[in-house]
Image (cartoon, rainbow, N blue to C red; front, top):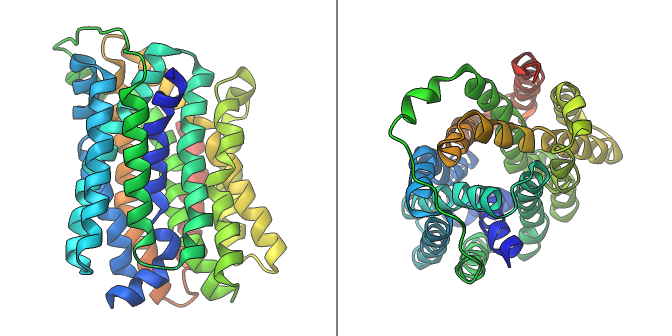
Length: 359
């Protein structure tokens, strides 16, 4: 039950990251808006998600991860369910912001729950794999329904199921928080870890939100085929996020940033389709390696408040998604139909190799 409860917030957060991007074109038609506006559906989620990362960590350090996690999952389910009530873009973005309150609380809580109940770096990798895998499943499954309702209805179901699992999971040991947490967030170790997480997690999610549209429009692939290829960007992190918790994963850390950037560049121009599949797979595999290292290293850097440290690192990734998702959507109106944006993302990902410390 500890594993099920700890992974439930990861699954909910990962699902909500990718659910609207999975049917971006369909949502644009249903709401009568541009793809750039559809990008704001993800931005709305991450505005509140990012803002609540450090506060969520403080709440977990004070009240316990399980309580905070259940509250977050229920909030995500509520926001997603309410989004079904009115097909208006402004209202939907508002409800996505409410859902982001829930994911912001529950994701940090889930990571802290796994730390307190299981406690290994590999366990953090499995937690991350569940989140990334859920996003990959969303990219593959939701396009099969095609309805604008599918992203919201599925997110509500996932949130409710996750809340039930975490509520019935064993309680974690409590530890008092200290008042000196926030000044230490300027620690250069945390800034390096935040940069690593912004590239590997943040940019991979940005790619995941638009890769289906890229392949569907630029390569003229069917929605089903594009959805399967796009799912690899997030789904294959299931394999490499747990590996990132081993010494073998640390040795691959620098290579993962270079490989992620190179694969993104190939994805931008990939033809024929098998090359696009290979590039998407390489992006997904590369994105998974740094997760466990970033989270566990952050927890060790601030042992007096490990949840707040994770919140700071994850906030950087969330801000990357918040800012870059609509910007990448805007590049679909430029010559190249999104290729320029994917090229910029590729460069940013590869350059993050310089943020990796020695240990």
